Amino acid sequence: VEETLILVKPDGVARGLTGEIIRRIEAKGYRLADLRLVAPDRELLAAHYAEHEGKPFYEPLLEFMASGPAVAIRAQGERVIEGFRSLAGTTDPTTAAPGTIRGDLGRDWGLKVQQNLVHGSDSPESAARELALWFA
Ligand code: GTP
Ligand code: MG
Image (tube, rainbow, N blue to C red; front, side, top):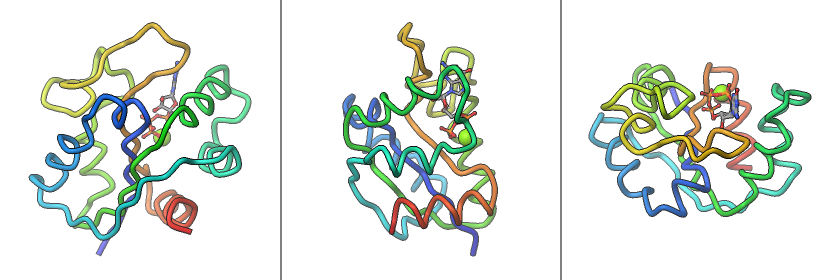
C-alpha cells in the first residue's frame, strides 16, 4: 500500500490544530501507521528541504521549521500521496481552495515564509526519502 510523510508544521502545532488536521486525514479514510512529535535539528531540516537550498525562502523556512515541535505522521492508503496534497491545498494559504486544510485554516501572516500548516510528500521517491529521515 502507498505511504506518505505528513508533517503538522510548527504553526499548526502551536495553534492547536493538530487534532483538526488528523481528523481530516482519518475522515478521508487514510490509516495512521506511525506518529511522533519531533523537534527537528538543522541537519534533519537541511536534508528534508535539500531541493530548496539557495532559494530566497530557504533560510526563513529552516528557521520557521526549527521554531517548535512538528508532528510527523506515516499515513497509508490508495493514492495517499496525491490524496493528501489535495486535502492540504496549494502552497499559498491565502489562495488555497476553501475545503482544504490550508484554505480553511491558513492565512498569510506577512512573514518571510509561507506558514502553511502542513507538509505532504510529493512523490513515492520523496515519501521514501522523507519517511526515512523523520522516522529514523
Ligand atoms: P510542502 O508540502 O511543505 O513541501 O509544500 P509544497 O510542496 O506546497 O511547497 P514547496 O515544496 O514548493 O515548498 C516548501 C515550503 O517552502 C512551502 O510549504 C512553504 O512553507 C515554503 N515556500 C515555498 N515556496 C515559497 C515561496 O515562494 N515563498 C515563501 N515565502 N515560502 C515558500
Ligand atoms: Mg514540497
